[in-house]
Image (cartoon, rainbow, N blue to C red; front, side):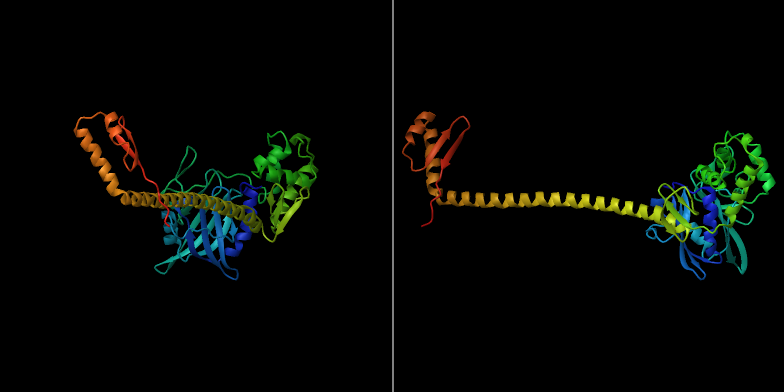
Length: 381
């Protein structure tokens, strides 16, 4: 199943996000426990409240699931709330078929309107960056320090280097790029040179009826035209949601069996990605709860056994106490007699002989210096 959003996926998602235009940002949800997830609650005119979910670095889509972020908002959430409170969405675009979504927010301060852009990057580790009209970075989720790119607060934001856009660039430019490609096959040229990925490159070759394994030098002019025409036709497609056995796509794929169909691409992603995640989290929480309950049950069982033993010992000791109390005088006489005999310096054998006819049955263990007295429990008549 889909593990990330490709550049072409984002193109179709951007189409579906146009319902958010002129909508008002109501709240931003993000916390430290779920650092890679951000949810924007937006009131979209004529469409009601919508949730825009970002799951970095893989996804951005409209969702029906709201995570429990409200209890512990992060510093970044508070930053976005401060700068984008009640801001209106004026435009939503994809930057040059890159995996970057650009949302233009209109804010008002001192009766003056200004545009702030929120940039959502779905590559590398993913990022969310807020810039002002001069491209100065006001704040961001993750700082980036690399040889080819640095993104830090207060610095100028720079987009990745411009590349070919097969959806919008002129046909002659696209054809020239394909013909000059050093890739060993047409499918690799489409996937890599156009940044469309292997999945869509397969589909383009298949729907264009061009052998995907053909070398660039083996392609006819007609082959080039078929491929380019099909790629250009993608801009006119109204995306739907199609879940196949191994993929989710915004358009029909004649080579795959449709498992489920949705009215929008975002719905398909939401049900496949978010619902699955929620189910896994619910199952995990249930397992944790079950384990906690099991541990508590074990403690309770042990405590019950301990209480039973204490009560049993109490009854047994209480019974012994009563027996000793009933024979107290005879026991005291026996002990006094033994002490008196010891004072006469008699041996233990002589003491034992002197006590042979004592009323109480007893055993003297001189090695352990103890006397064991047998008391019979007399039944009550």
